[in-house]
View 1: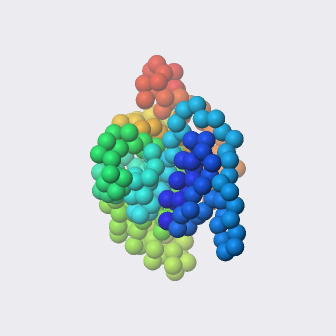
View 2: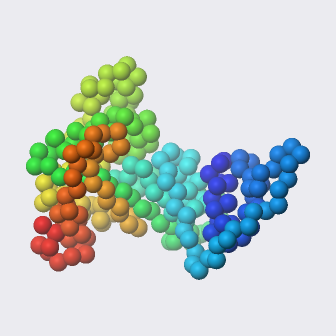
View 3: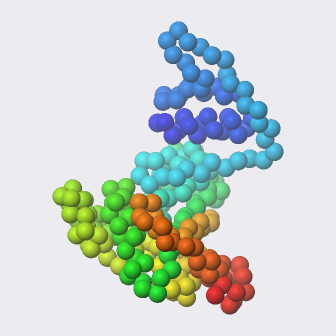
Length: 239
């Protein structure tokens, strides 16, 4: 698999070693018929280990991340979903042959948020995103108990009925996967994310890729509210 080769090449580079990898998909230096180059030197003097975190959404690549990488960044994480996806990670740890790897393995989630006194208006761009990327989100929809939604969106998207597909996305699906609404509401709804099994949480503001972001001015108070919920700043500072 290409990702397996890619991670192996990165490990050589981050260790300051000459790049010399011959894999099933990638080879460095290039090796072809009648062509052979010497290993490529890397001008890097490592002073600390650099962890490799693989962003993955599909089942196979998630298992591979647990096997060959130091961490995983799921594409569509939501609090509680890890319990369902844990067998995929466990299979990768088993392939790695390292009984202690789970203790060191990092899981970095990310969540997008949008402040608006109108909660449903704030949900709209994320519903559009869920429709646009419904095929890629399927493993996470199923893990969250939304298999029927995944099937319905697949049907509607294939038929070109986009607006109907957007309307089919339940408010609960967005509410559990993003942070939307007034700042005080976001502060409270951020707690399950902060208390989940994540190593760390990355927060991004505004609608996701594919939506109109022209009017999405970052609300710094929302970031402060999340920091307050995480206990990083004194109560009242994040308002």
